[in-house]
Amino acid sequence: MAPVSTIVEAITDWASQYFVWMLVASAFMFVGSLLVAWLMILRLPADYLCRPDTTNCRKTQQTNLAYFFQKLVWNSLSFALFMTGFLMLFTPGQGLLFILLGVTLMDLPYKNQITQRLASRKGTLGIINGIRSRSGQQALTTESQT
Image (cartoon, rainbow, N blue to C red; front, side, top):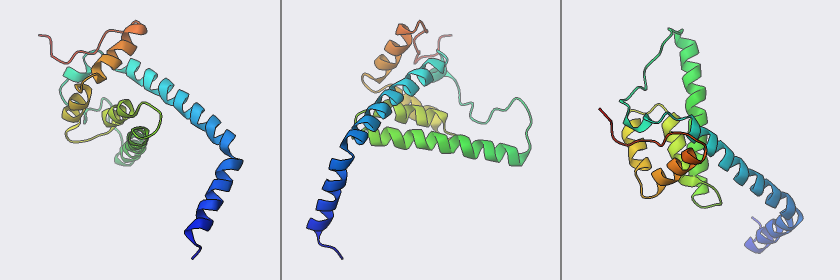
């Protein structure tokens, strides 16, 4: 096994060679994460946080295999968003928003409670509603209006 100093030196050499490319990739990912978060927040209906659990609703009957693969792909993408958000908690980006969006898109048993808890964190709902108001969308409500 190579000594730690050799490994550190190899990583340092590699990072110095590709520093500009890593910086450019990081900037693109940061801007891309802002754009994706912005678009997904705008697509949520205003009463999304007040709705009852609608995880298992389907309008058209699908074959079991097609439904399974659709859910597999959708939940995989949602998990990728969730994990991206988790990584962004420690790197530049909108970590909490991506975690919220990932949980929102997943099929989880207690998805509504998790989503409402994440959205009600101090400042999160304000950020989401600020994005929606700048784009001319109605703010998300947290209480059902009867």
